Image 1 (cartoon, helix red, strand yellow):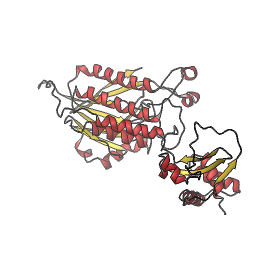
Image 2 (image 1 turned 135 degrees about the horizontal axis):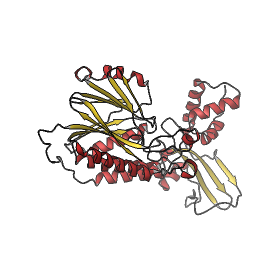
Image 3 (image 1 turned 45 degrees about the horizontal axis):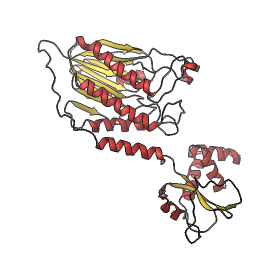
Image 4 (image 1 turned 90 degrees about the vertical axis):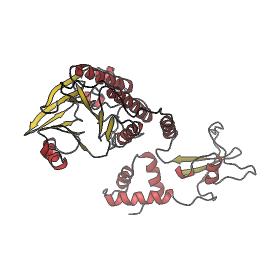
Length: 409
C-alpha cells in the first residue's frame, strides 16, 4: 500500500495518537487495519518530521488575504527584506527548534511573511510553568527536622498500628450537582481528604498508636495527560489544569504526613493506579524527596503494583486492584512476601471499585475501601452510586485487625 505523507500529516493534526491516524488512514484506503500499518504510518510521520529544513520555498503559500493580524503574527522578514529560514525564525523569536513538528511559511503580498508552526505535544507554556513552579518550590523548602520527639507510650499499654488509607481521592474530578445531585471538584477533594484523616485521628484517640501505615497513590489524581485523559486515554470530566491539580496533591500529602508525624512514626507506601499511573509515581517520589531528612518516616515508592508491610504478627498487603483477580491476591502474597510464613494475621487492602467489599479467603482477609468522591456524569448515568467515606484500620501487634474507623461524608 502506498502512503500519502501529506494526508498522514493532516490526520495527525486531527487525531490524538498514531494508532488513531493509522486506523483512519486504513479506512480511507479501504483496507483492514493491522499493526504493520500502524508501524509504517509511525515511520513515515517520523521521517517527514525530521526532514532537513532549508531556504527553498516548497512549503510556501502566497495569499492576498486581508485577515493578517500584526498583533499575533511574528514577521519572518529580515532587515534586508529576505525571508528567514524556519530555523532562523525560531532562533530569532526564541522558539525551541527541537519542538517543531510541522511548519508552513505564509506570505502576504505587500504585507510580509510569517511561519505557522505546530509543536510537539506536552511542550507548551503550561508544562514550562509547571516545572518552573515545582523546581522553585523544591529549592525553597525549609530545613525539616531529622527527628520528631513525642510523649512516650505508657509501657503498660500496648501500641497499635493505624492504617490510614484515603483512597481514590481523584483530585481534578468534576461532578455537577445539577446533573448528579452532588458537586465535586479539586477543592472539595482536598478538603474531604483532610477532614477525613483528621476525623479518623480523632476516632483513634482511645488507642496508643506507635506506628502509622499511610497508603498513597490509588488515583490521587483524576487524569494523567494534558488532554484530560487517564493513563490509557479515557476522557474524563475535569476541574482545573493538570499541573495545578498535581501541585494541590503535593501540598495535600505534605500536610497530611506532617499531621500524622505528630502522632507516630509513618511508613508511606505508594500504589500505582489506572487514572494516574505516571503522575502518581512522580508525586510519590517528590514526597519522598521532601521528607528525605526526616528520620521518623520511611517510604516504599517503587512502581511495583503490590506492596507489603509487616507489623509484628501482621502482614498487610496493599494494591490498587485494577489488575489481576481479587481472589488470587492471597496466593500472590504468599509468593511475593518473605514474611508470609512468619505472620499469623494477613490482610490485603484494595481500592479502585469505590465501594466496600470484604471477604476472607482462607486465612487472608481482602477488603476494598470506600472513596470520598461521588459519581461523575458517566457513573451517575449508568446508575453507579457509593457511600462516600475515608477509612482507617487499627491493628494489634498480636491479635491483628481489631477495629475499622470510618469518616463518612
